[in-house]
Image 1 (tube, rainbow, N blue to C red):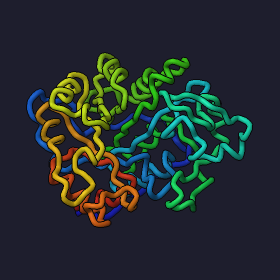
Image 2 (cartoon, rainbow, N blue to C red):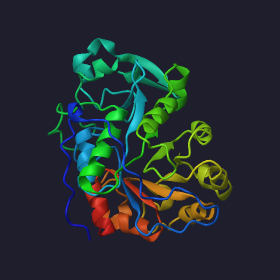
Image 3 (tube, rainbow, N blue to C red):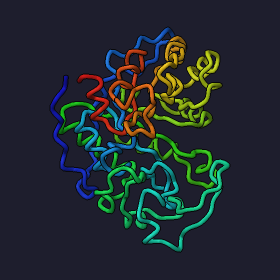
Image 4 (cartoon, rainbow, N blue to C red):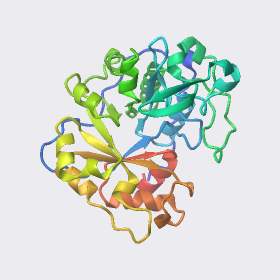
Amino acid sequence: MRTRYWPVCRAVVPTLLVACVTSPGTRATERSPSVVVPAATPLVIAHRGASGHRPEHTLEGYALAVQMGADYIEPDLVSTKDGVLVARHENEIGGTTDVAVKFAARKTRKVIDGDTINGWFTEDFTLAELHTLRARERLSFRSHAYDGQFLIPTFDDVLALADSLTRSSGRTVGVYPETKHPTYFRRIGLPIEERMLRALRARRLDRPEAPVFIQSFESGNLRALATQTRLRLIQLVSSASQVTPAALRDIATYAYGIGANTRQIVGDDSAAVPTSLITDAHAAGLRVHAWTLRPEPVFLAKRYGGDPIAEVRELVRLGVDGLFGDYPDQVVRGLRR
């Protein structure tokens, strides 16, 4: 079991981050066309950073996640008005920043992927304006002790942090960006994919063996990315129709794996029988990364009786290849590292 935490690098303040060459990744990326053998040790993917401990998508949260043992940090990518990629779970930032206090008059209404949303949107602010904001905890039942302390990082800030943490910890720290609302952003003239690939290329992270996964709920942009990069692509899925054997074989023509909701793998009730999703995906040549492990009663399936470690261990027994968690320390504990 891994019991000690890696030291956090000092470069968690944006002004201290510097560009440097990224160390090579340590995991192979070639996807075999045959049946996938489950990973000996599933990857620990820090969902929005250590988002159970710090406000999501902050450098401090990402750094803490790595200190706790995460293999990958996950920045969700949206665009600013001036075309800079920043890490926010959504382009609407009313719930994750103090924008309502500092820019009250900028509240507006938009239709995003068919949903009408009232709020403040990253694409209406320049990076300089966003840098005047501070992050806050989104969920009322989590600690708000760090509200107002941390900046909104750019994607380049996140890449620089991963590089610095790789150097300081002596182990590879990967990045797992998600393109958020890519069709919407392309439609308004702020496409995400090209800027994301340029940022990765600038740090020599466009190699097949680089410690990078690119994920999306949309399939069109992943199919396009498959012709533009050799990096590993992950199709996020959330419905039964997306995980039939035929659908999985189709996904395998352009993606390395799938990101599946834990409820698609095993139900909420204690008597629920696990599905064949992992077996079917492996048969199609796809890896399976499960999202999202959270210990709070509102999230944790009833079958685990309030024990989040039991969820980790069941998913491992079922053959999962990676685990997204808000509390990376709990996932690591469940894996007995």
